[in-house]
Image 1 (spheres, rainbow, N blue to C red):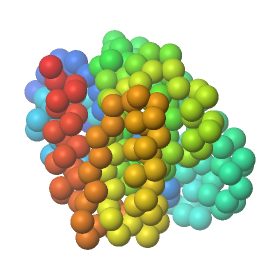
Image 2 (cartoon, rainbow, N blue to C red):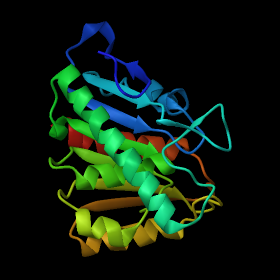
Image 3 (cartoon, helix red, strand yellow):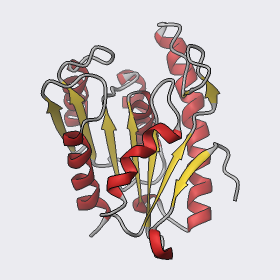
Image 4 (tube, rainbow, N blue to C red):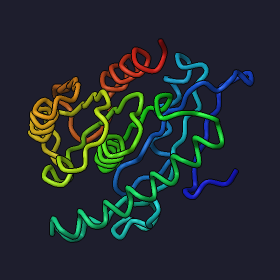
Length: 218
């Protein structure tokens, strides 16, 4: 099946049966190949998991060799919200295609993302009609708290990880998101990585893997 988003697909080795999926959403200006590097380690421990790393639906305005989930040239919150909602709808269509292709339910799917991809994972994960297995977000934030609070449908377990020296998405966004999730009675775990800027270090990757294993494999 051809998906609506160009996707790097990493299937289980030795033709093992696919029992669940992890969808990895790249950051602003990145692509599916970039974020698929996480899978090199994760797949050894998630032997029945298919990993899907899509390119976003738009060419990045600042880095034409990469992609964007929404345009960041304007800092107008209304513009960002409108564009992110378009991406959200695209991703929901994409996830439905994945569910059909691999005969999976939302409860068998983990949504994960870095930076802008983290923001999209949160929005899609909490506003869908069916609860996902879990959400893992690296170096991200909530796009619009007022908008999201009105649209929450399912309270999926979340892990958020962030570098304490992040100059792109400042680390206070982790604490801000944690407060939001607690107030909305959503299970949230957080990890602040010391001496870390805007990337995914081994410590964060390992913590994310453990969280996914705990939730996806039971």
